[in-house]
Length: 382
Image (cartoon, rainbow, N blue to C red):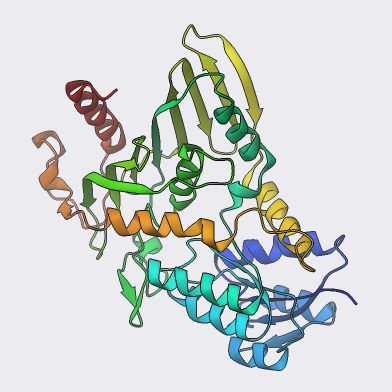
């Protein structure tokens, strides 16, 4: 029999997941048996694709799981953060393996409850950190572990993705700590740039399949926009092995800068740029290795293909739920830092003047990177 698959949600980001899934299923032999769609008028095309292939539509995910209990091989959960845990636990009780959107859960306790429930049910739970399903990611990790450039001395991640009030008002949980009484802790580090928090932890870990754990966090969380959490971070995380990982990211600068990760090593540097390339060079500038990185859609399809191939138990997901707990734990550590007012933390040159609540701050990202470099030199930790 064909493996049966269900998806909860086809709107927002889930729309991209749904489209990628349809592409993957064309050649997989698996069947999209059901989908939960709460806004069928807005998603008429997706609904038609589901029913045309013999799938059944539901307006409530619980009804879908009840109707297909014991008959689902895989359930996709590309939904809001605060829904991940209840949906995952319900789907596991219905007998399905899972692919859950990142982050796995809004708190470490909730994430651990999913890991425990999966173990008790004998099912797998994969997490949608799509870079972890790209072959280049694993090849880079092997290169780092080979010691060709020596041990990792530090990692820095920088990025600027401008967001507007529409981003933060698109749903009820954006920029919030909780929604409907469940943890969310939406922020740049736990949502838009969560992929790169996780990836840095993976590269920093001493074993091939390991993900590093953070021992402490220091730095600044800043709030420029009128939200509950923060929209800008300049933090330094230190792993249990003593490797500093710096994240300088913002949604407030109007200039978009794609995520860039720089790994400084004993005898060179490895620079990773989202969807473009990763390059390893020796201290003298000689290039020793280069990887062409896949675009996001290619990685998303690779992730879905790999997870679908895990149905039946012959393989395990490349990034299971247990591995995703470190990212949640890291966010919990970061959240112990106070959130400061953005403009109060900046020099007079950034004076707010007559700005509105949602105005961008030009030059913010460059200023934060420059300040971080100065502090790094002053403390002699570079």
